[in-house]
Image (cartoon, rainbow, N blue to C red; front, side, top):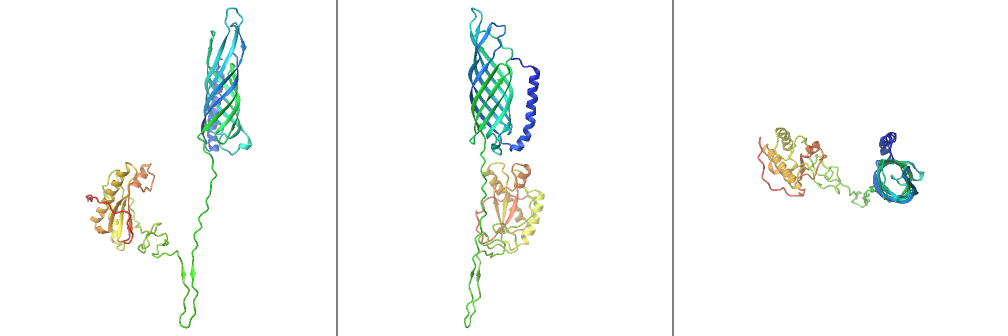
Length: 401
């Protein structure tokens, strides 16, 4: 049962080589990892050392069981822990007065499994499906008990062996193999295991692109009379009455002012560079740089009298509660509106609206993204366009100039 240094060094080098190989296997296998639990039954052969003890082994064979669990790191490498009860070996004494007895064997350990072969039928399937073969090696801690006096030279042993495995599509797999525990014991076993964390591959269904509805054109042929000629009339349902590039059937603002940019819904927008109008966290105070930018906005708004209403939209990042962020955005919108009014924009042309954290434009998980989300935007509103929600009543904050 004594392990020599050469065996330990060989085992450690083998584990190092397997670890280095995992990276390449991960790339090829797409990092398909899973963990499993299993159990097995087997026949054992036990060989206790009885030299110079007065005992001989009367029956070295017994039955046993094993419990095991592991983790699949890649398509080739798995690490497994196990507990094995190997039964007992019967020993008899050649001396009168020395009782016969048994020596019980059980072991607890861990090993690395190297899957070196997979049948061609299983190629391309998920990890561990189909018929495969593997070898394994590791360390185990032997525990003995006996009805007679005995001594244990070393409880740590080299454990190694080989097995075949057949994996089903539902994560269940069957195993059969041989485990050897140094020179003292061995087990031929069959077992079953269940893998968890395997995501079944599904065929990707590509839905066909929707076919646009045909444009129905009604043509009225001219009718000749003695005094009147009726020209042909072409009727198209895809009309654009406000000439903003969005068909009326998709246009939510069918009377947007001519000459202004519109969004995908056909509503007018004012394109102003407000990238510098940001706020510190939990604040609605305007700094000098923000006021300088808003001074330029005042010039653009006063130069565009055809835009009757402008919504001042304020947004926050996702830090804090949703209710608190909504209130903070309303305060920021009111702060910007108050400053624009103080610089000459008519108050009746402005509507302040806070949207809280509901409309981010950048990643809220980074400081840079959260800074971009704490922003102010302007959007044109037509007199005929229904407002989705009335402006909340709140006290206008004092503007420090």
